[in-house]
Amino acid sequence: MKRTLKKLAALASAAIMALGMTTTALAADVGGADSYTITITGSSAGATEEISGNTYSVFKLAAFDVEDLQGQKVYTNITALAPFADLQDDIEGVSGKGSTDTETLELAEAAAKIALENTSQAVGNTTIKVDEGVVSNNSVTVTGKGYYLIVETAHGSDNVYLSTKYLLVAIEESKEVEVKVSTPTVTKKIVSEHDSTGNTLEDADTVANGDTVTYQLQATIPEYDSDATNQVYQLVDTLSTGLTFDSITSITIGATTYTVGGQNDCTGWIDTEEVATTGGGSFTITIPSDIVVDNADQTVTVLFTAELNTSANVGEEGNPNSVHLVYSHNYYGDGSSTTTTTKEDTVITYTGLITIKKVSSDASSTALEGAEFDIYKVVDSSTSGATALTVPAEAGETETGGGEITEKTVYVIKVDTITTTTDGTASTKGRDVGTYYAVETKAPTGYTVDDTPFKISLKVESTALTLDSNGDASTTVTDFKYTDGATANSTTVSNYKVTWKTNGDVNNVEITNDAGLSLPGTGGIGTTLFTFGGLALVILAAVMFIVYTKKQRKQA
Image (cartoon, rainbow, N blue to C red):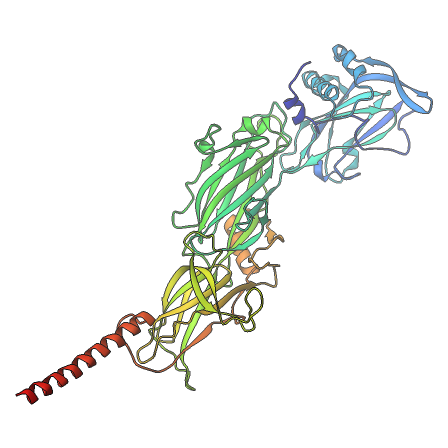
């Protein structure tokens, strides 16, 4: 019986030997000195709800005697029963082996295949039907010590748990045998834009409009039997309208990575018909059944990107993104008609708003319309497109080595140009947390331009999340019991609102203008100099004309 290690790995928890599994001896044997009760439970001792609706057949694989050898139990006179006689050497060979050893796994699979072809050989020609709360339906009485094989022959149609198909136990007393159960899970994370290694994962973050957000989906594949067919395994991701799907970066299953159009091409797995080009919608990744079965008990990792668009919720609300998994819970045979949908896992991306209010510097604080500002974000000097900007220093700020300074140089990128309206306000939407400067380039009519860079600090706070200085949350946002990603997304928005603050204020920042000469054009310090220069030239020309005229008259 030579089989590949890959097959063996898929069966690692599907064959459990008494030497390596948790069993509980019952208080007394039933039906005589050589009569024993095998009771099947779920993952918690005495529990049956996790295996409710399943049917099990019990086969006696071999008989043995038990001898005490220097205080240790030893199985002797091991004798395989029909129709397992051909496995005699293998049965003897598992003595002292663990549940995941090669010999144990080979024996479990081979014995199960024979058993399923000879169901009449089940002990007492009966099966165990496990029903929740009915203890008598999850036990069977057997005669004689030996190795017993417990095989799940039918899975409850409504049972979402994937349970061990083969249990191989040594019975020398009545035992409670625990069936290992599992359910696949799916989690969603945001890959931090602030970690160049891509190893930092978050449940919430803040970005600016137009930024690309990288998401990670991670799910487990159930322990499907190697003979399973038509297994359904789908990851369904639902975006909010503020997120526009970009592309699948990679899908990694076990040790193999698949890419769109690559050597391991996964193009045919991806359905984006429900994705909206303007943002929102959903996409589905369907992994082929044969790949799922060959990678039983492995992890699936998906990386994909989406862009925060101009429809994104700005300010206190966020832009969530949910995922759920659809999988076959019939882990052997045809799994196409028995599927389960997991609850959603959700992450959320926020984007901020900066509002400026322009007012007169006098006591009236009149709102001023028509002031124009360039908005700059402070970045690292190595950032592409960064330029130097001279700005006022903070009070008490000193230069390297000592003396107090009045101005300093920062590196910035221009992110917007805004103009105040009749109420004196102007806003720039879709901004990330950070430090910004507003530079006035045009003054309202009747006022002078003040092109001194005005500092604006944009921060985000939340009572529901713990956010760091980058606006990132490492704590879980939530997961949902809904099967509709859109519902999960809308609930996230209402449950996880945040507060954005500019310079510590939740509303806006005021910038004043002094009354003065109203100058034409676009304003700004350069325009002002050119305008005054032009006026000076006109005056000079007039004076020279008058002087020249008087001179001509005298000569005459």
